[in-house]
Amino acid sequence: MPLAKDLLHPSPEEEKRSHKKKRLVQSPNSYFMDVKCPGCYKITTVFSHAQTVVLCVGCSTVLCQPTGGKARLTEGCSFRRKQRIDLEVPMTSGRQMGVLCDSPLCCCNSTLQPVS
Image: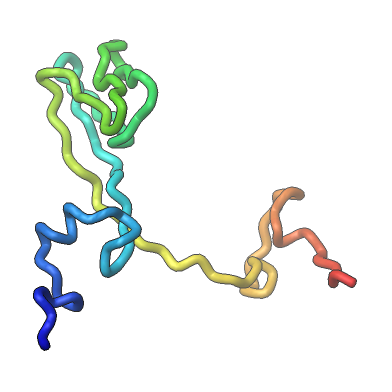
């Protein structure tokens, strides 16, 4: 008996509706966006689910207000969704990669002791 729907090839609408952890490949619902102030035309980076009021750096105009989920943009503000960049974090320290930094708090300058 065949399945009612194809589990390996879900439609994009179906993937968008499903929970972020129950998708075929997990991906967040949140994103960063560039918001242009309608008064001074300065661009500010805002998180889509911001939990505080975001003000313009130039003229202190309210750009967005928090709601229960996504932040609500002020009328007249234009926005552009930033592209998401997936970076793989190397599991080696900077010292092993041949890179040293000057910070005393960095993992490059620490000596790891084996746990006994």
